[in-house]
Image (cartoon, rainbow, N blue to C red; front, side, top):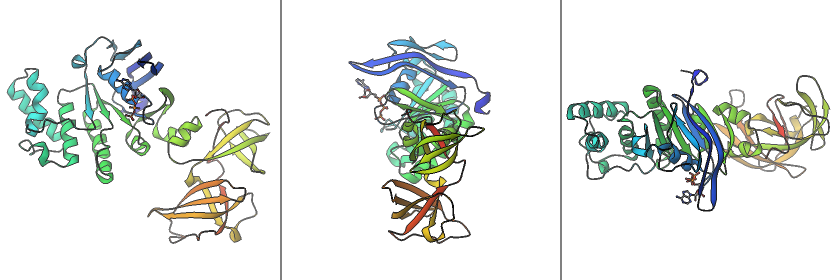
Length: 369
Ligand SMILES: Nc1ncnc2c1ncn2[C@@H]1O[C@H](COP(=O)(O)OP(=O)(O)OP(=O)(O)O)[C@@H](O)[C@H]1O
């Protein structure tokens, strides 16, 4: 099902929450759709885990309500909510077999043995750990422990699975594998996943939609592409990926949201999705891969910034350079190697000329921080 056809399933309606003197959320609104992979992304301490704990029932709102599948769950104890949480620490019982770890919740609820057996095997199959039931947690790798934690969390068929920085204990390669695994599991089970992370790459890779939050305030909610390509403010632009932010002034309004803007003394044609007026100040945001660089001696007769290479890093797929413009500004550039020029490189201090592909810029008001 595409996210566009899904309906509101979990919502925060004007929720406020404070701990002692610290206000974490104020009149916070949020809508999560049925069956979507929704990620809450923000810096440390911004309130991500608090949102998850409010859904799980480990915390109660001071004001406002949390509605799940049409029901206000504010007064429902955690153990009666149709939610389950996967913690970063796995929280497995070390002395129990994998089978008993996964069966634990069902045994406690008095489910009969034959059904437990069937459901444990189903859950192990979903996380692709068939045959591991007799091992103990210490006989598993980090990734396998994480799968057991997921199997345990899905065994009682929650409507919402909450995942708190669930992959951050894994090394880079394993984390990438588990990102694909989580997406596969979510699609297979078709339940709503709410995933909390401070890792923007993880958020972009896995999610149907992402909430970017800072200081308890929603900054932007959108698909990974919307968040990356059309950040609504400078916080989102800086938090998601790398950004080159040019301070600009509108000098002429053309048709169809096109403008001439002055940046560092040069006039540039820019396209925006807002109306701006002459003399208005804006920020023009360009990602490192949006900029074009040429050796100075090859520069065409077009407007361009001039500067020199002060750093160049080979990453395998790209050459990432830092350029200092003659006016002192610093730009980050990322260029993909391609068939025409598979070995291009720069020397430190090499003089270069920089511009960008017209239309790839993203323009926001100067006061949107
Ligand atoms: N039980 C508590 N009592 C008092 N303050 C708390 C409590 N739990 C969280 N806080 C504070 O609330 C703020 C938000 O915490 P929260 O755990 O929601 O942030 P987070 O975005 O998940 O951070 P991180 O990415 O570091 O886990 C932090 O300043 C934290 O210190």
